[in-house]
Amino acid sequence: MAATVIDGKAFAAKVRGQVAEHVARLKAEHGITPGLAVVLVGEDPASQVYVRNKGKQTVEVGMNSIEHKLEATTSQDDLLALIAKLNADPSVHGILCQLPVPDHIDGDTIINAIDPAKDVDGFHISNVGLLGTGQDAMVPCTPLGCLMMLRDHHGSLSGMNAVVIGRSNIVGKPMANLLLGDSCTVTIAHSRTADLPAVVRGADIVVAAVGRPQMVPGDWIKPGATVIDVGINRIDKPEGGTRLVGDVDYDSCAEVAGAITPVPGGVGPMTIACLLANTVTACCRANGLDAPQGLTA
Ligand code: NAD
Image 1 (spheres, rainbow, N blue to C red):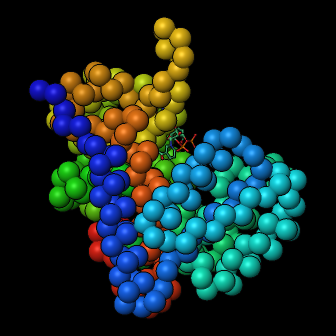
Image 2 (image 1 turned 45 degrees about the vertical axis):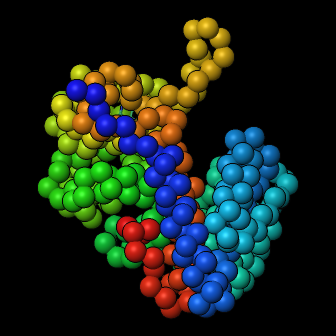
């Protein structure tokens, strides 16, 4: 039987709708407009596209979008000074510095200079610690989006075997912590994992975050399992041109899985939706209000 396709595009639109409702309520009842500041250093074309999309969607849900586009030659000290200014600005509730930053700037130093309460990417070491100890944290957007889709599809995840392929700080590790928080039995697999196919075959939930096109074939998937494909890879088409594929081989996995996210249109759209959700959460917390239900981990 063919897998249920988890429609990330539609789900992201729903999340953005919920965010917009909360923003409208914050404005009407408290006179507060959430503000998201995005800092881009240099002219990386992919980063420019991301930043443009973020800005557009921020405005669409009724929030203020503040963009700082800095020259590639900007010094680390100047960038730190801007972060300090944004930290101190009460109209800014979320701060995101688009990664990667140029080589002469240390990304970790910049991330850890952001006020953790405004760290809507969830990369600050304090947020990593809060998530790891099961406390209220700003949660990285891509894993948060995966968790939301899994909860929506399954209801409870308690007791399920989850395998996360990839151990990066931005996807794999926080994803594993979130699944643990929802009482899954979690395995983190990586490039040195012995017999990866056997590990994946034991999973009720597979989250693939590797960056290798179509690496996971259908015969690694337990029948009925849920497959969340985080990968975004561009490959050549036989007839010329390119197309986007994930880290799983969609056609063979969809024949075996119970549910699967497509690429494009799965995890990707959820990432910006969760960034907006995190900004509303940060704004509520900064003003002593409860974070919106359903938009946090
Ligand atoms: P990364 O390169 O930081 O980490 C990749 C991980 O995969 C590493 O931990 C590595 O151990 C593991 N790995 C590499 N080869 C492997 C192998 N043969 N077997 C098992 N594990 C292996 O990548 P990342 O930043 O976590 O991103 C992973 C993928 O997700 C990329 O395709 C990226 O473009 C995509 N991504 C998508 C979104 C989104 O919004 N949808 C967001 C972030 C990343």
